[in-house]
Image 1: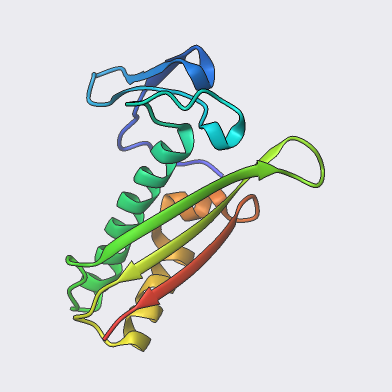
Image 2 (image 1 turned 90 degrees about the vertical axis):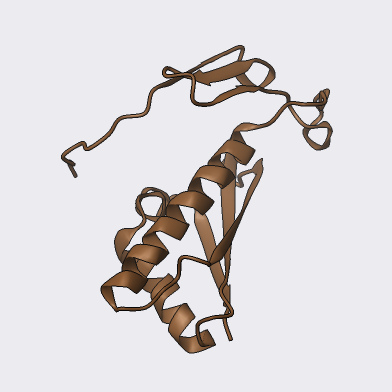
Length: 144
């Protein structure tokens, strides 16, 4: 599948999981460290690729949810999206990811929020499109 690029983000990582990553425009810069839970040093004031992915997915999904809601004349601007990204060994070898998205918006009825979140996940969010068929993504919502 091809896209018509509207924007391209560029970042470079040096030193892998125990190095540094930074966006070309310097908008994001982070020192990286393998967490102790994965056998690494877990250095203070560092992050992981999973944290960066979780932050990006949460923000992107929130935007997709707001877009879907606005198309239906609803307001989901206040929705809080929490994204949990887990990493672990795969049965087939190597490592894999699992994602859990949790959306909270008490201003919308539960069933309506669930329908909006499902549509955002299935039709709009590019992170959801990228993970589909590759990464297990569990979606849960808490509405009014």
